[in-house]
Length: 287
Ligand code: ATR
Image (cartoon, rainbow, N blue to C red; front, side, top):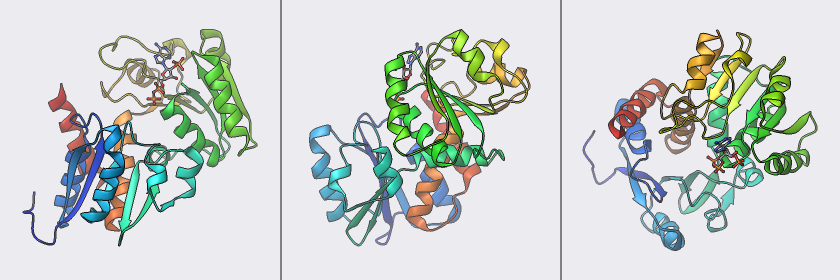
C-alpha cells in the first residue's frame, strides 16, 4: 500500500458489523494498482450514531463512502441528493462527497447487471427467474425490470413475492409474476427461462449441501447466478456447471458493485481482476 500523505483522499465503509467486509481489501488493492493517493477504511457505526457519522463525513471531508447493513435505508434522509435508481429502490450503498454535497446512489443492483453483461448476457427481452424476495432480490428485480427483462419471482413466503411484484408493477409493464418457491412452480418457471438468479441464502455456509433448485431442472441454455459467495462455488453453481450452464458467482456481483463505486470516487475505470483477486483472498482469510 502506498504511504498515507497529507493529500491522501479517504474513503470508507460504514456498517455494523463491519469486520467481515471485503471492501477495504478490494478498494485498497485497486488504489494501489492504479497508484492513486486514496485509502479505504472500515468504520463500525451503530444505528444511533449514523447522523453523527454522516456529519463526520462532511467535517472530515471523506470523499467516498460505502454504506452497508443496517444503514442502507436510514442514511437516505441524511444526504443532499439521491440518484433516481437509489430513490426508486429505497436503498443507498454508495455516497460521493463533492465539496460537502453528499449524493447517494446504489451500485448493488447495477453491479449485478454489470456482472451479467460481462458474460455477454443482455437482459432485455429475456425471461429471468429470481428466487427470493428479500432486500437483495428486490434490487436485482428492479434493475432487471429496468433493463427490460420479464420476471418470475419465486419465494418461500408467497406474500413477499406478491408484494414485490406489485411494487414493481407501478413502474414496469412487462410480465412480472410471483409464485411460491416449490418444485412444481420451479419446473414451470424454468421452462424456456434464460437466466436463473438465486437471491435467497440457501446454500450459504454452514448449509453448503443445500440447493434451492433440483439439478434435473438445470440445462445448458441457462445462465445461473448465485448471490451467495461463501462458499464461492455453491452447490447450485457446481450443479449448473455440470449441466453445461454458464455461471456467475456472488463475488462477481460484489466486486462489480465495488468497481462502480470506485469509478464514482476516482473517475477511473476500476481494475476488476485485481479487486476480485483481493476479495477472494480476503474471503479465504475469513475461513
Ligand atoms: P437479503 O437482504 O439478503 O435478501 P432477507 O431480506 O432476509 O435477506 O431475505 C432472505 C431471502 O432468502 C428471503 O427471500 C427468504 O425467504 P422468505 O421471505 O420466505 O423468508 C429466503 N430464504 C431464506 N432461507 C430460506 C430457505 N431455507 N428456503 C427458502 N428460502 C429461504
